[in-house]
Structure formats: structure tokens, C-alpha cells
Image (cartoon, rainbow, N blue to C red; front, side, top):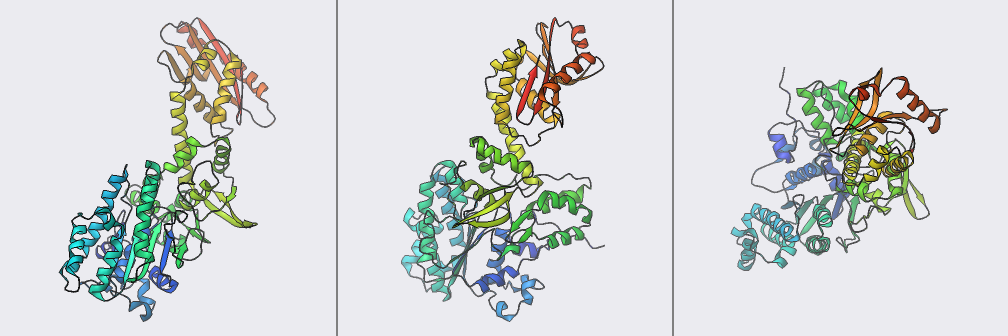
Length: 557
């Protein structure tokens, strides 16, 4: 039996994947469609880890003129059967290729240093310019200064334009410019407080190389969002944008269902298809159903070593979840109600904005939902128009993203409970003040997101979280006592003066909060939950019957 090909986890260089014979999901017809598109500047917006960088590597390896003939890389791939019309472009252009994904620094000064490193590395990759007799000595001096990171700020503003002009002089051929993850420095700057400075830098770089550049053949950019209101793309009338809502280029980012089935068949994991579909499918680019490629490959990697492998949230562990954290921690009740609907499998309808800026991305604005759509946290099931405004019907794509929302909320809620002053709650519980106890619980219920409404174990965990915060009082769950197991017990472990027994009920069809409180209290009596506490020497025992229905709670003592 032939040895199975390795899975290219984290390998984004197309040449390395082919040379080392990794499993490759063939997306090379992307080249054909880029050429057929014919736009001077093309921007592709997709969520993180959906194959943007690999596709940019495919473009570079196909078009770039190098000493080594790279045409063999495309033998037996789909582009090789597209015809001579496309094959003639192989190795014919000087190519500038940079990625801005590493620009995630806490200050503008550090981000600028990283940008200089990125530009310097690309200049060094074209070191033949410094040796060419077609370049003026003064330009060679500037070229070497940038290579050695000695250039001043203004030189880096126009560095890509300068490099393209030099390449055009040397090769007498216009230049292809590839800029990957162009909006990463903008997102990072937004969350770290130097957004305006970064906008000015990126705008200057892009305008010089993409707008006023006679040496440019064409340019391709990738990112998560189309950022235009800050005038990054000012004057680019020939800019062609392809987002998650477009049908064009839809199948080139992420895996289609047929590609996933083929992958699983190759690795003898076809029986895992339904699980993968539940966890990692659900994206819709245009009208094409798409699977998260990173999560599918990670799942396969682990499943090959463990047939009992349990799906995990692979993608969200590699992506920035700042926006989900902001959405949950800074949102109001209206936003949390929308999140609740989504987590319970319902849909919401929101305005659709294609041009999004980080400055208008306040979690309480209507733009937030379009941001979540473009970054992979929502899926459009329908796009329609009201007047001049587009709208979309949104759902959460899959189990992986649902889990992300739930985990992020749980972490925030647990931290909120931990740091809150709950002395009023504790005094009410220990003092037999059911009215104040009930009021405090209902107040916290309003802050929660009830994505497990109706399940007693959800309410159980909710109450334990509220009550578990004092070294003096021990909170126990599901402890055997009398003839059964009580839900929650609170004990003063220092003095043994007082203990509290709490029995929880969830209201079902035909039941009321009042009636279920009575049922809970009767259960405490019938099953003698206080017996073990009496045997331990507790002098005073309070018994609470607690009933929940959605975001409402009733408590009797």
C-alpha cells in the first residue's frame, strides 16, 4: 500500500507543497479566473485561514520570472488543461509579493519596525537590482538603504512604487503586485489605539504603488474586509472587489463539499463526513457551500492518529476573537437578545454593509453584524433589498462557531460573577430573605445568555457560579443525603451554625413558577436532604425551592 501524503498544516508556500508532495486541494484555476477577470486591481475578502495566502503563493509561483523554471509545479494540475492562452503567462513577470499578517504589535513604532522588516525582505529578494547596470547609482543607494532598513519614513511610504519601477527598468516588463492580509495592521491598530497613524501609512503605500504607477501590470490584494471610507483605495476606479456575498471566485477559498469528500476518501475517513459537516461546514460564499479548510485539515490530522477523536474549535484558536469578546462584554441587552436567538438556532435580519471600517465597528452599531459576516462568524441565508439598503438573514454557520460564542460568553460571565460584590446575595441566602435572593438572581439572569433554556443543569451551573465565592462557605453539588441527591448545599465550614439546601426545578408545559417551587420544597422534605447536615452538627438549616422559566426565577424558603 502506498504511503499516504502528509497534510500541509500551516504550509502556505505552494512550491513547498508540490515539491514535498503534500496533499493538495487543486485551486489553480484561480489563475485562469484572475486573468479572465482583467481588472487592474482585485481585492478578495475572506475570513482568516480560508486559503488566501496559499492562493497568493500560487499566483506568485505561476507568474514570477525566476532563474529556476517553475512550470513543472503546475504539471497535472487543473490550470495545465486550461489551454495555451494561460500557459504562456508562466514565468513572464517580475512579482512583488508581501504579507502584512505579522503586523500585530502593541504600538505604532513597533508596527512600523515590522513593516520595514517586511519591505526590506522583499527588496532583498530582488537583490539583482543592486547589480544591474540599468539602475542609476542614486537609486541603487536608496535600494540598499531600504534593504538594510536605513531608509527614512518617507522612503517606506513609496517603497513598493520604487521597487516596481526598478524591476520594470531591469526586466523591461511591467510588474505584478501581490499584497496579502492588507487589513491585519488596521485591525491591530484599532484594538491598540493607533489607528489613524496606521491608516496614513497604509494609504500612502497603496496609493503610490496601485494608483499612480505606470510600472504596474496588475495587483491582487487579500483581507477580511473592504476598507474604503478611510480612502485607502482613493481613486482606484478600476478596483474589483470579490467578497463572501459574491458568486465570482466563490469556490477558491475554503473547501467545497466534493473536495471534502475526496479528502476523507483518500485518508479512509469517509465515515467522519457527517461530523465534519456539522462542525466545519455552513459557510456560504455567494451561492457556494464552503467548509472551513483549516479546521477540516486539523480534524483529519488528529483523526488519523485517533479514531475516537473528538472535534475541536481549531479555527477560532488561530484567529483573533477580539471582536466576539467585545461583542459580548460591551453589548447591551438588545445585542445579547440577538445573540441568544442565534445560539438557539434562530435567524436575525440585519442591514448588509460591504464597506466597513474599524472606526464604525462599535459593537452597538448596525455595522457589527456585517463585520461578523465578513469575518466568518455569521452566514447569510438570504440577501434582499429594502428601498436602497441591502439586508441579510443571518445564522451561525456551524457547531465550531456556536461553541466559540458560548465559550466566550461563559468566560466573560464567570469573570463578571467573580469580581462582583455579592454580599447582598449572600446575606439574603443566609438570612432566609427569599425576596431579595430572588431579586438578585433575576438581575443576573437578565445579564446572561440563555442558550440552554429549559435545562435544569444550565440553571444549576448558573446558581453554583453565583454562590461559589467565599472561603468561609463551602458549596457542594449533587451530594448524597437522606434518600437522594440534593442539587446544591451551602455550609459554613468554620462554625457549623448554618447550612442551606437548594432544590432547582425548570418549568415545563402546564407548570408554573409557583407550583414548581412547591414541588422543589416538597422534594427536600420527602427525601430528607437535611439528614446528613443534622448529623454533621449544623444547628440551622434553610431550605429553598427555586423554579426557573427562561429569564425568570421564583424562590421560596
